[in-house]
Length: 366
View 1: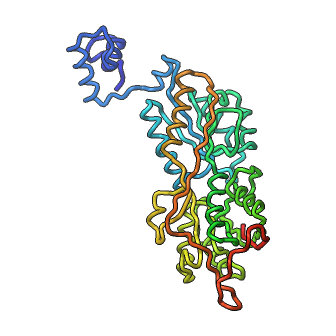
View 2 (view 1 turned 180 degrees about the horizontal axis):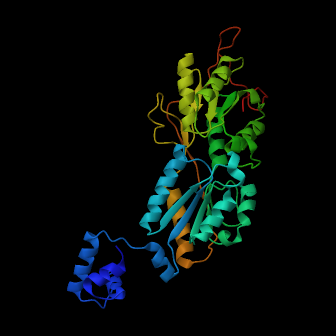
């Protein structure tokens, strides 16, 4: 069913039907109601592409997600962002890229931005992004004028939003340090953070904290993760670390998913959390308080963050021009039950050693 068919049904012009459907003046109210009623019963739906050709506006906002949305943070962000854009009468089209897939060279940011240019997206949201990826993006000059980058690792020369990952990591590490922990493992190090040279990743901030506190970085207690979500293989790697000599007294986890796996592994090994092993999460995901014990973690206000992304996107659409803005969402600690004072029995005497004096160099895990 289209406007021309409805026009023939009522023996009127297509313009008359269009005016009636859009509640414009120039059509008798009785006829307009009859046209709208018939269109609804016949299943008429507006042709948005035809409208865009007439108006020169598409209302399309392209979303280029450069990581799999399998982690709760990105899944929730994507869901809320699409809802906010819909409430602003904009149409979100999402493309998901995985930079570590074999076809990443062909299906990269440049390829996605070219697609959004072809469908005449009025704004493009892309993230996460660092300086090296921005170098690829900047080549698509048609897109950079209408681009908003979210989850930027560092300040960029376009509209962008950042999460204070390094600040959140420092708060988490300081909390563990103040609790007497000097051997702090890092659980869930992904390929992006491992290969990224930016000083603003969680892992880079972790290593910086160790350095500034004069603690030794021990790569043996950095547990990598080849996938964005925990796997049984990742759990097995953690078991080996916890069963080894000089095990960490606390784990800083890449996100709450890995923290939940850490709780599971600790339970299987008979470790009491937090008395024998403290576990610190990240992101404050929906189920962080449902674990036993409930996770101490780092929170970002996702609602504020998504609202700010939407505000930047709608500003570009409404003004049809680039409006360079920057925004940083600060982190806050959420203190629950998975972290306690360090109490590690000495392997020779069974006694509980005291925390090392400030400034003394002792071994720590990364």
